[in-house]
Image (tube, rainbow, N blue to C red):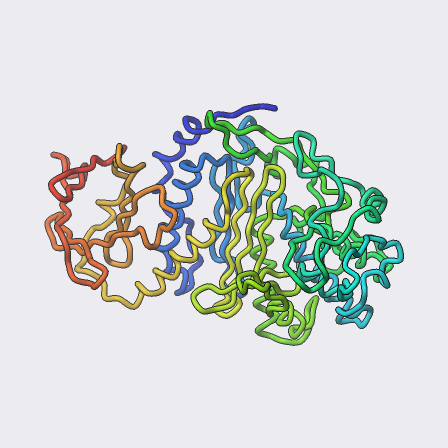
Length: 483
């Protein structure tokens, strides 16, 4: 295994790029109104990637029918110095389950199967042992909701390195008879890659087509997901297909991991895609829910997939038909995450407000869901800020930059925020809440805006003889502006 020490290499990018201008927005009103938010997201993600010592990260945000923001940070391959882009391909691992679930629901729409069909009736070779004589049936619905009582995995050590020996479909079937249920069906939530693998076999059995062919013809091509595949394209590895790396080790390095193929587990974990493609996938859902009718699925079917179909006895874990379903800010969110050797990804969808957030990372050890939530919180703060009156006109760009914060913190970013000046300590797990706003008072003087909108202490900015801002003063102490 190759080792890469991350900090020094990555910090070369941070100082020069952390406060670069945000991507040029499309010329519609909403985009212009959100330009400070794009800048804040850009600053935050660039810094977090460095502080979390990630090789690369790609992200995208969809708003209703289109992708309105996307970026790549860092490297898709460290040794070859291939930059991460919005079009970089990553393993999406368990997000693959959404495509398998949609295929199942297409067959349901066509009247070719029922959610109450028993798995044993659809797959004649299904011989996993039921150890609970009073158990209810193992059905298509229980597989979709992870409530079947099946074990989490097929009986192979495919999550074990260094080689990650994923089994073939034949090998999965061969050992199935030696496995037993963990719980009676419809008793507990037990996340199961084996269960979604069996759904993939049902797709092939019921449709009469190989799984890969069915997915390509009935989902990927119609939705124009040209960089989404049922495997990891080996010919693009270490280029357009990002190289996967391990979790951080104590010495600050990560191992480069070998390319894997999920083989027989592909319906649960074998797909690859890009941030741009997953954003388009989310926009299709918004379009179908708004327009009604049928596009790939019936709109009523997609709504049903987004609805809670399983609630665990602890009232904390809920699941739809293939989709994770959960509550944020009093609204229903849906989506899925993925974690495979060398890759982490997340798709977070707000069907009511028609926002979707995609984050893809080519390393283990960091949860991309935190990045997606951070982007959502920044946009939420921006939506609230747009209704506020702007401060007195000032050249706020003169103060924008990165200021030293050692030894107490990594650094402090300063940037304009809807007529005010924002101050954000980096790194930050919650950038929206961690953002302090300053009101311009004239002559390089600002006042901190308290949570109740009253004004707090004064913050001063110092200039050099040439008129350039070089220092920020607060509480009689200062921070130097970094070059």
